[in-house]
Amino acid sequence: MTSAGWIVGSAVTVILSVTFSILIVSLQKRVMKKPNGQIDFKKTDIYFIWTRWDTVNIICALYAFICILCLLIFLSAGESIENPWVQFFIHQGFVFTTLAFAWLISRVAFTLKGIKERWNHEFESK
Image (cartoon, rainbow, N blue to C red):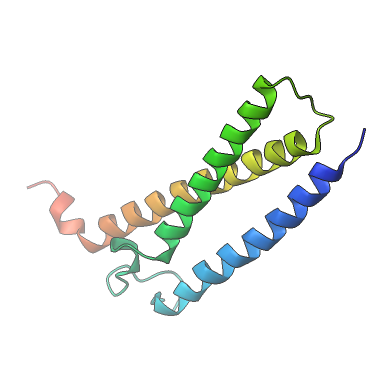
């Protein structure tokens, strides 16, 4: 069994992950911190607007979808795990689906936490 698809898939994952990380980490300059190091949601608007993080998440999810679609095409054509392309698309589909899901969950969590801290008076019972 050759593992060329796994090796190429790992290389592509590293390259895309580093690129995505550079795009997202550059947004940290816009995050205001409290003296204790926590995010100050009252001064930070980044979680309430569309940012590069959202765009990268959409691109990541689309890439994962395309990889899974290509995997299904290869599998329906009768290819097996021995095919390097099948290995590549399995690897890419799994990694980037997991990454997009984790980013989505963290984005929603930050946004909800920001809403709770910023507009806390709206949720207090009257």
